Amino acid sequence: MSGERVGGERFCLYDSAAVEAVLDRMAAQAATFLATEADPLLLGILRRGLPLAERLQARLKAKHGLDVPCYGLKLKRYADDLTLLHPETELTENAEFSARDLARATVLVVDDVLYEGHSLARVLAYLSRRGAPTVRIAVLADRCVAALPIRANIVGVKLQIAAGDVVECHVPPYEGELKIELLRPLRA
Image 1 (cartoon, rainbow, N blue to C red):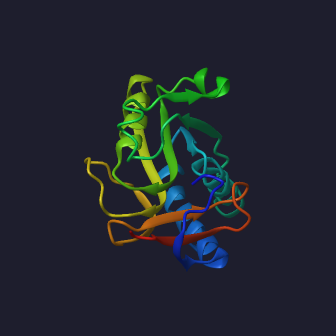
Image 2 (cartoon, rainbow, N blue to C red):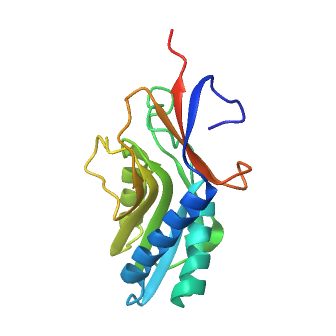
Image 3 (cartoon, rainbow, N blue to C red):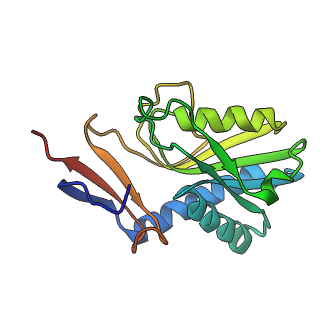
């Protein structure tokens, strides 16, 4: 999503209270994966995956007593449908994460929407090259149409919607209110 709002019909599928409840459930699921791991960490995909990872991090600490570090990973192309313009997804890590040894890490990758899976496939390949032995995926919304054999271990909500419709996850600080909307773009 950019600063411009695409025209069409918008429907609020999950308001702030509902998304907060979904995040509580996701944190409980993450706690079962991470509680017994020696070196767990969260890796949020910028943009919206990082603030979601930070929300999970806060819940893991407050509700489950787990102090899990959180890092961000920037993808130059995060929309799965821009392959003609950007055939390669470029990853940019922060210096702190770059210096981290992943040889014993259990990485929970956090993103807002799982669509076709191209971007997450690149992240998984990158983490494999970095030596991470265990990688799991958490997404706030799964569109249930992954083109690649990528699946999330933790799914906030599953949304089976029309192919032309768009799932928009609104996540502060990028949007004012936490919610999930469905956008049905104007059709010519």
